[in-house]
Image 1 (cartoon, rainbow, N blue to C red):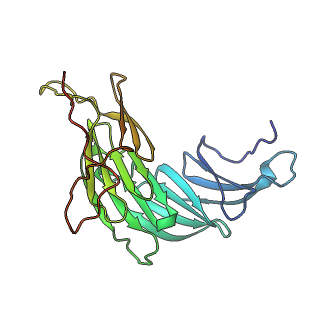
Image 2 (spheres, rainbow, N blue to C red):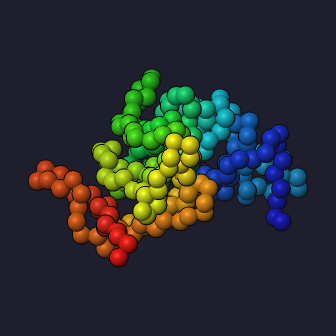
Image 3 (cartoon, one colour):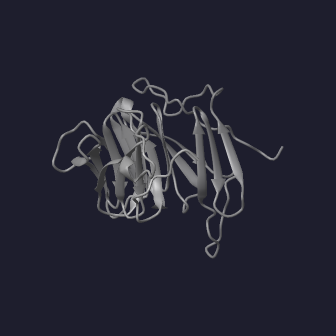
Length: 248
């Protein structure tokens, strides 16, 4: 053990390294208190290594650091905190009644929040008193707790859905709907949908796990050649229509 840092009264939920100064460690506890620690400082106790602190309202969901800012998702908002002053400089997203998941794509100045029955895309460059969404990604049942975001796509899912949705990052257009099970699972009115409990994405490969039975479904689109939504005015998606499977 190199160093133990003391100061949080509740358990630490999230950790991230600051991007503007690599020696700074950012931590957020269950009471939504944010602390910044200088890992390069010499201290026998670690308590004096805390170089800044602040707090945000609501229960913590996630946090992402970019440049000198830390974007903190808690409750119904995503707040940008300047790590140099530890002051909140902007509320970049408001998603009621609750944020369940949060991802960010700094290269495109976009972030995405998952809420009840939908996810929302936000442009963090827009300096406005009340954040306005770029696109609403609808089509889910219940909370969107699973979220992936990269330069091409946003992937959304949740524990009440037996499918995931793939969206175009730039436009928010729906690119594909993927069943978590093959063939798709069917349920009677008295049965509970399996739901999606875990999601992993690597380029054109997606791995999905269900909430109850331990099934894992793998979708690999790296060799597909038939675009969906093909039209003269539409640029083909990076994701394609899945193959049809049979019992043969």
